Image 1 (cartoon, rainbow, N blue to C red):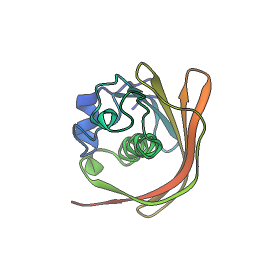
Image 2 (cartoon, helix red, strand yellow):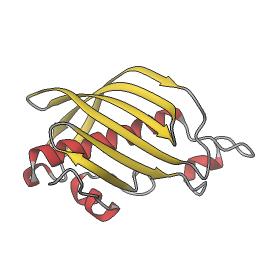
Image 3 (cartoon, helix red, strand yellow):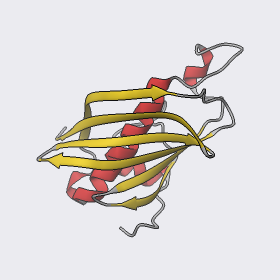
Image 4 (cartoon, one colour):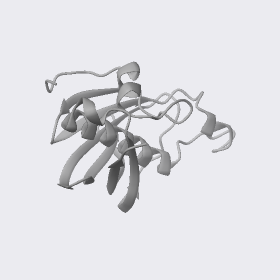
Length: 149
């Protein structure tokens, strides 16, 4: 997979098991296996979570921003390990140092920058940053484990 590869939602669904309404990335860009990836979430305002968070003042929940980072990280892990990892489950293990800096609202394009910091057997640690334009909206360090279904 070349660093310039863009993965559409169909390809993402081949790589990770998430589905609507919980697939929170629309595409993944610039995948660098073993290093980093950038996911994109177009925040439309039609997402289910906006019905209750918050009516009349819709804001994308911070925990879902971290989940979108983790889904991007899952694609990175599969791109790193190759086809035999497709469709495996990626379980959150830790979320550390999460910071939510600015609200994410309908119309925003959320860029999810994930960097692999460490891997040991089937456990991976990442740094993630979510940006809207040139503004940092959230960030977290998190780890996950990849397992068979």
